[in-house]
Length: 192
Length: 203
Image (cartoon, rainbow over all chains, first blue to last red; front, side, top):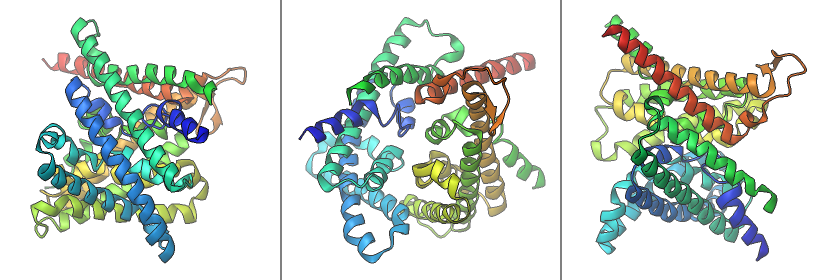
């Protein structure tokens, strides 16, 4: 049990997928100009990344490793993720239309979110068990959503004060803020 | 025609340099830029994948129906990435270890899919090739700039050769992940400054 707790803290904060592992930076820059869109994107990623992580793990263990075609991993994983995103989109449209209206526009973007793909590959690379895969994917995705929300909140405040120099507005200040945020996350290093 | 080919090639270096202008493909730009050597390796891997995907996407542009185009593009790109992965593992093993997970992650590099979607599916093969080459080399250039700053100031070396005197203590912050973000943000700010100056001169 303690192992899982440590894993959650490590994946969410200390090795944060965005700030320390550098995955999924495009949405952090792209959709954090308002709090609502950050929330939508974050929720969509948590959902898809957890499903993709576990699905890819099952496929790796039951198909790729059995047939000894691990070298096709990249190709298979990305197709699985693309198909999964499409499937989630259709399912959501039928089952939960309000949720679809809230998250729908973010779903196609997720296919090329390197965080979803990266988590799926990391699970295999670090030889996680099924339970660990589930926990790691979920915790990483929640870490991603957290950063997205923090960033959206900070950016709304920064825009409101209007004190950011003209040349650094938009993307540059977002990246510098991400660096500062990464420093504070790295401060938790001693915990694990 | 020749002028257009040259034009599509050169736009990738300043006017539309992808990571710095549009914040595309910044994840690998941040991750592998601790050393110039790994930045170059990553850059050339992307150049190869980008050229191959642009040429193939352009070749099938009139055959593929619009609705399934993303799936087709991604399969093409993934095939290119698998080729790079296997070649690198066989012939450049140390580099393969350094780049690690970032080689398969070229699949989801926004630049590659972005060029397929925005350029290659509307343009003939030759133009797409020159676009891919220019964009890829522009990406490599940005990586080299960032990694040069990080390597020289962070550890006092460039491409492994010592540049600064031995007594230089090294600025470890730049080699750690947060340093990458800050340096990247500052470079973008400087780019904006230079662009603003050029605009002013023209006006």
